[in-house]
Structures are given as C-alpha cells and as structure tokens.
Image (tube, rainbow, N blue to C red; front, top):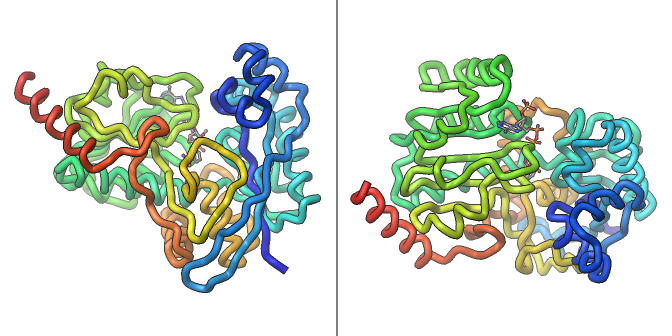
Length: 364
Ligand SMILES: NC(=O)c1ccc[n+]([C@@H]2O[C@H](COP(=O)([O-])OP(=O)(O)OC[C@H]3O[C@@H](n4cnc5c(N)ncnc54)[C@H](OP(=O)(O)O)[C@@H]3O)[C@@H](O)[C@H]2O)c1
C-alpha cells in the first residue's frame, strides 16, 4: 500500500482561483460575491496527485488536493472558530480519502494558532509546511543576491512581517548571512522580542527592529512574509538593484513594481521542483513539476514515513528548518529556478535587470 498525504488549498485571488475549478462561477460572480458566498460553500475535492517518487529511495506516494472555500479576507474577518470548523471539515475529507498526513496551505496555516487547534480535532497528523518554506525562502534570497552580483555578507537586508511564524525564524537564519538586518513589524514589543531572539543566536549581529515600512528602502535584500491581505510594498519603498523575495500569499509586493521597476529582481518565495513524474491533475498556477515549499514539506514527510505533526504553531526553530531541509534534499526536492508574478525568470532577464540597476544607480 502506498503512503498518502493530502494538502488543503484555498482561493487566494478569488476570481482567478474559483475559475480554476468552476469556470462559470468564476466568470459570473464578482470578487465581492465570491468573498460572500465562500462562507457557505462546503469543502471541495480537487484532484489526485500522482507520480511523486523519492530520488534516494525510489518510494512513491499518492496525494490529494482538497479546497477550503474561504478567501484570505474571509479567513481574517470571520470568527476564528468558524474558520477552524471549515478547515477541520476539509481535513475530515482528507481522512476519508485515506491520507496519512495533512498539509495546510496559505491562510489555513496562518489563521489562529497556526494549525494546533485543527490538528487537535483531527485523527491524522497536520503540518503547516512553514519550516520548509523558511529553508527555501532564505536560500532563494541568497541565491538571487548572487545572481544580481550582491555580496550578501556585506549587504543590508530587511524582513517585513518579522514577527510572524515564518518571518521570525527567517530573521534568525538570515542574520548570520548579512551585514545588517532590519526587522519590520507592526507591534513594537513583538518586533523587539524577535530582535532579542536573533541576538541570542547571533550575538554582535546588527539587528534593528522597526515599525516603519519605509525602512525597506535602506535594504538591498528584502524578504517579505506578512499576513496583510493587500499589497504593502510599492516602487517608492525599493532601492535600485534590490532583490525582493515575496513569500506572502496574497502577495506583499504590488504588481506595479513588476510593471515599472525593471531595475529590481522580485522573486516568488517558496517554489521547488518535486522529484518524480508528478501530475497534480489540477492547475494551481505553476508549470508542471513545481510546487510551493509548504506543499513539498508535506510530501517530503510522507516520503520519509514521518507521519507526525511536524510544523505546528508559531514557534518554529532553526533546527526544525534544517532537519526538514535535509529530508527534502535527500528525496530530491530542490529550489526551483526563479519565478516572478507567476512567470519564469530567465538568466537573460536577470542580466537585463542588473544592467537596468547599474543605469539607475548611476543616474541617482
Ligand atoms: N510561499 C509559500 O510556500 C508559503 C507557505 C506558507 C505561508 N505562506 C504565506 O506567508 C505569509 C505569512 O505566513 P505566517 O504563517 O508567517 O503568518 P503569521 O504567523 O500570521 O505572520 C504574519 C505576520 O505578518 C505581520 N504583519 C501583518 N501585516 C503587517 C504589516 N502591514 N506590516 C508588518 N507586519 C505585518 C503580522 O504581525 P502581527 O504579529 O502584529 O499580527 C504577523 O506577525 C502568509 O501570506 C502566508 O500565506 C507562503
């Protein structure tokens, strides 16, 4: 019998994502109507996932995509208990399908206590996928910096959303790799606490907590990972030649940056290549063979036979991140080529971005 997993996704861009499963509804309903009706919709079975195969052991697994109908806005507005109930209902569908572990995608892991209450009500283990998301995001920033000929260890970096589950541990992992690190939060006590935690791991590091989003302009490397449902990083926040890794879904970086700032490399955080001839049997917006890091964490745990609630709650440790990274690498998951606003970025495009950055820096 093959080992199994399920992964919960939900509409992020309401019209686009509802159209992927229900083309007519996506066409007819406005974004506001989808937001409203999502409250009453039941969980939706999306597809069976086949063809994932470990590169090291040859083990194959089978999975399912299931959808919790709520939009991010709905998840943040509704009482947390109502949202938990809908996610648990979706999790029960996973149990009925025979999944041995459940991964929580996007806002289903952000809401409330980061999956703890949901795991307590289900019989199968649950993971948010945040540990592997951190591993992949930090690697992506450093690799993208190298592509843009930025010496990371001499650069100033910023983490926006540094007080969150993902941001907090990204801060601990990035602090040792850059010269100076700004931490942007929206609550001064929480942001200062994260800075103290970073200093405990990296004494002597230059770490500056702040509530001012304009600080982003001081940094060459930007990692943004907030739970804001609207974009909050615009052109005026970014210096020429900077690298921006946007892990948030919905995105933190405004689409206007991609359209107008040819001198900045914006990459989607958390895109990985999946080992084996995988077929998701559902278009979630990625080219064949690629998945979000949070999905990959669930798959890697299933390949490893680790049917446990690996990442739950908001306190992720760097050790957890390193361990899941080792497991995922062993089975053949790897950081994918870069993508930006749903499109692949070629080496030529990165070179062109670098040239635009040089021109912008000379003229400023
Ligand atoms: N790409 C992937 O594979 C992947 C995987 C998992 C999650 N995600 C995405 O990652 C994001 C964060 O997830 P998480 O689990 O870390 O969520 P989280 O624990 O709720 O953290 C989000 C943080 O963002 C902060 N925040 C919200 N608005 C802000 C603003 N305007 N300025 C500064 N900080 C702000 C919140 O501050 P407070 O603490 O003050 O509330 C919170 O600390 C979500 O968008 C999620 O969908 C992506």
